[in-house]
Image (tube, rainbow, N blue to C red; front, side, top):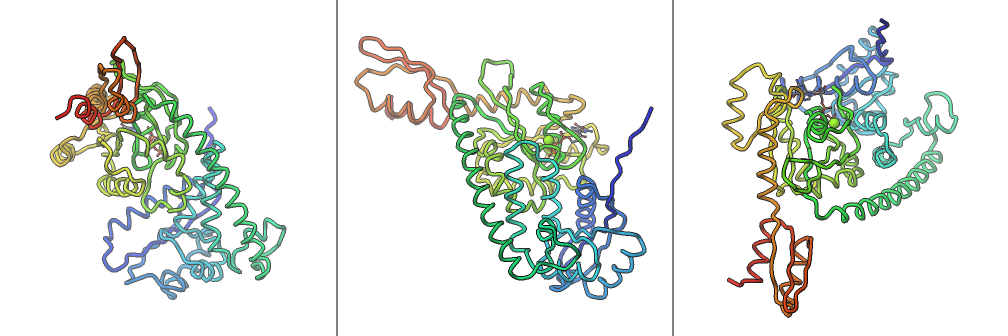
Length: 421
Ligand SMILES: Nc1nc2c(ncn2[C@@H]2O[C@H](COP(=O)(O)OP(=O)(O)OP(=O)(O)O)[C@@H](O)[C@H]2O)c(=O)[nH]1
Ligand SMILES: [Mg+2]
């Protein structure tokens, strides 16, 4: 047997601040998450630096003295990349780069790198490139050598002002091009989705690594890539879901969320996240075995708000119950989140319970009904067409028989128009 060990080439130092009212343990957790992100991007964490400081230093992020201390550690430990848990200003990046003579990466930059590594489809690649360029644009300074290197420049000296202006123009031009490309992809998607109007759409959302793809594969017998790494999934996949009754259901798996997801990324992943926005029911998958699962819940809820999805029917699914050691934790969750379901996608625990609940939710959300209307009652017929998906129409001499499907709310509206009251 030959064991292949993936070699990580970069040796990273991670840096975070504990500012005025930040919780020390939470900052440590954020650094562990950063270490996982770094590993996903191909960098091994050698050192973690946490500084307690009232607020970030505008010039060096950490204090000047700390920065000098770090420089020594960098040299002693052969560090070649320094990763910050926050976003840095162009000035901070410039100063740190000059002092450390190493690559400086901030949280958004790191997440963007991972997305770039993971993107497979044309759509995901276009979305990531757009987000990267938008992130890069305000950071083009004299210290920014990336583009000049691409153009064949050598050394660590940054480009001159004229070069920066040319780079900016090139980037802006490319940004517009990518936006047009994405608009086209989005309009294709809209055509596709309107042909699926008679399906009830269910979307899996959750913090990255919560087990969405594992659950998706289990429920749909699909074969989506699931892995114990952050952001295993970047593209959305949709499959028919069979819950035993003759309903037309579609289930989508999509990109995971994370704390401080760069805003450009959320904006440029608009079309991928359309699956979530168009969903009738949102299944929020939570990794219950994670110590900070409740922080993850809040991050996901905030992101759903950003996507204007907070009013949709939502079901919380607490996953990885098999990996939870304390029974008290499960009791706590059952008590606090009354509607919650506790499952294990990996071990197939309580999947029948989940399916039953899902069926109930779909029945509460969608109904199929039939109605007889006098042929002259055009007002009612118009109401049915605008409020429901018409599945079938049969005409008699004087009446029309319509079979339609709609959500509960619209069903009541239709009945009010037809029967009055
Ligand atoms: N112990 C345990 N592990 C699980 C369970 N469900 C998923 N996992 C593991 O958790 C890891 C992440 O699973 P994924 O399904 O890729 O998670 P995801 O939410 O799709 O992650 P991203 O696509 O990266 O956002 C994998 O190693 C899974 O095997 C579970 O019920 N119990
Ligand atoms: Mg996934």
